[in-house]
Image (cartoon, rainbow, N blue to C red):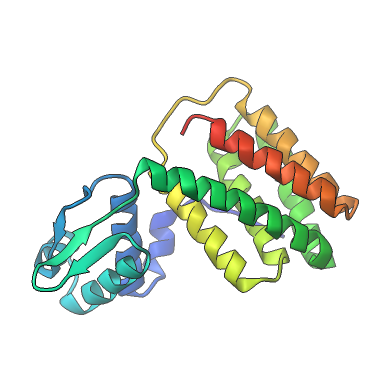
Length: 219
């Protein structure tokens, strides 16, 4: 049985300190709490997040690998963040990767993974009827994660999971249109039915439409 819990704080408590700190810094940068060009010092991070220097150095290394900061010799580390163009490019790349993921997943999904996908879609139907946007968004993420897993391609799974985090944290709070949940459900229904029918072309088309509509929605 697949259960989803939307509790980032609880998850962070189970991570090594450096990974937990990286997640916090990543979120603050993506949400604009740390501005592009802002200098980051080990001491300021130690003071703000109440950690020692060792996890700070590892977290800064991870942030640089993610392209969120830049270390300039003899000057220090500076926030880069994502520009509007970066985000637009990311949505385009995500669309291409999501389509490839669904193609591979339809071909490679196991019986157990299919059961999990079916159960997840049933949860989506349930929470759409309840008009529970928070739960629906959480399960929406889980639905896509199951497709990444079923693609049985670790690199693709890693890239798409990262894109989900970037987009989620960089999204600005906006009111959802009245028919939002119903539209999202039907888009996922088309994807799910492609899995049921083992129709790769239908799955690719359904995911393409879903990604294009996701890109056009307020965020």
